[in-house]
Length: 331
Image 1 (cartoon, one colour):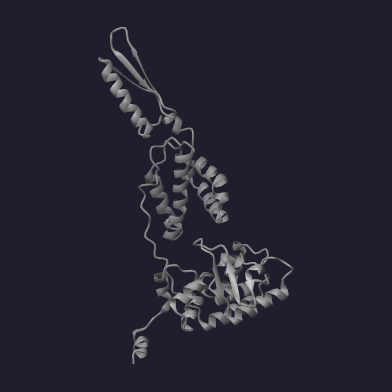
Image 2: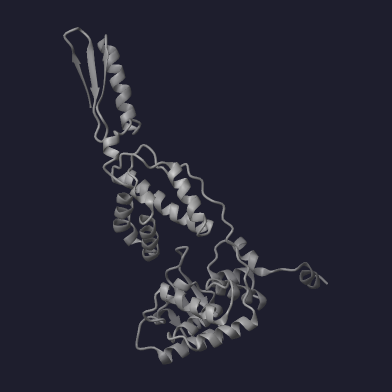
């Protein structure tokens, strides 16, 4: 709100106040000039274009935003565990202790370069995306007195995460041998079901017996990565695996009772290490499964029904088409 008062010397002093910013004042010879400047300055204040005093920005740190975001926003997400882990890791970095008066895009750029020495570009983009959203929420909903999100101008890294890793027959035999000594009796059925269904790890671990229809040989997946539920057909081997699990379960609703994502990852890593296999991820089993579906002669729509891909272009890298094979069909 602007206030205008006439001084003893005949000049007019105007002052504009807005919450979160320091008062701004100027002196004019004419009242009309004072009123015009007041309207212009108030409009800038409404657009958030007035500078925030350093004293206000020094009162908060980057970690304050991330901690509040973690406790109020992250906990409501399906990926809460993973996102909490990423935020907690960021809070251990020196950048988290910078004040809002200190933090700049350059700080995040330097942090990005340091992270690239340890993790892949896709991971860095995911981490910085969480932090950027935290700043957006804080500015939009929590009245954070910043004129601009410091991550807005930071360019996303180019990512090439496409993998075409197939599992060799001898690797599969080595995995089965290594899994014999695994203490978790459900890890091998989990691995085999992943190959038979192309389901993601999270989808498998969330699978419940009520989602399985043995008569129709289908499994319903209510929660997926892309947000769309799907019902998939099951192979005969998948049915056998599920019946095997039924014989060893303890009256649980879940097909894989009590197994977390981290537990599955650690078990997989131990098996791969014992099997002496290099560069094979659990998610590669999904690629293996989809590739096998195409090798069985399933069409793109049929494979998409199973895998959940809504863009067929994403499936082309699984087809491994060869010109000579297509030529044989054209005879």
